[in-house]
Amino acid sequence: MSDIAERVKKIVVEHLGVEEEKVVETASFIDDLGADSLDQVELVMAFEEEFGVEIPDSAAEKILTVKDAIDFIKENVA
Amino acid sequence: MFDLTGKGALVTGASGGIGAAIAKALHGNGATVALSGRKVAALEALAAELGGERVHVVPGELSDSAQVEALAETAEAALGAVDILVNNAGLTRDMLFMRLSDEMWEEVISVNLNGTFRLTRAITKGMMRRRYGRVVTITSVVGTMGNAGQANYAASKAALVGMSKSLAQEIATRNVTVNCVAPGFIQTAMTDVLNDKIKEATLAKIPANRFGKAEDVAAAVAFLASGEAGYITGQTLHVNGGMAMI
Image (cartoon, rainbow over all chains, first blue to last red; front, side):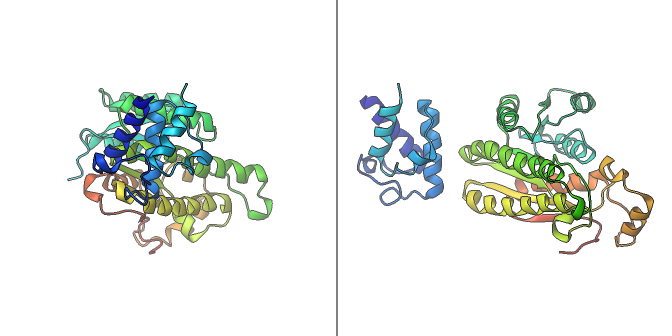
């Protein structure tokens, strides 16, 4: 399962161009990692592609931190 | 200038006069083109005329949302990447407003606006990811000026301008530009059906004193589709011989 966390962090690092150390689980995409709303949409799209999971808008709105993303994917990827 | 070598371009409504001219212009500038439309035979004929490996036929019906999704996927697969999207497909169902039926209204909105929205949404996702894209939507001078008998068509074209400007603001940072080209009176099958009286009255309002050619529109599209036009977004380029100066 930690594999999922690593893959999520890798996507965040690549997409937002931030240093790996900053991508801790409590980090907020917008407040801590400098993402804007479009970055958030792109991250969700990248997660969907990487994990073959569909993230509905209602769930995407609640994915605010790295941990939120990891938890959603753990719960929804078979 | 305006070289499109290595770029993939999806053109909708490529079976029509303006669409075919656009496809030829982009192909002529080096792009690989995917021709979409409803009339498969006409698309195949255009593909044969262009010849070679830089052309694909990807038929699709824009009023059907499932087909639009499928078209986006087919085009991506054929081109590798859709770098240029030309939303040219559109239809008219002209009638005086008082006699305009729900069906005539909805058919025009469904293809011209809803279909274009869905296709653009599907295609711009990849453009954003790749950090490159050119969206050019063909609107019309009547979207700005209005035209008696074309409330549905004019509404759909004006709506596309608003849509394009909003999208342009959202994705400008991703190096994706979104612009419109608004033809005036262009000689095509769509305008051939108008009677001579209307044509004469229209010509009197065109300073260039001639109707436009499909190639006039295609040249504007080729420019906005180019790398050189990267600092132009959210704009409408009017191609109308001066009949409306906006």
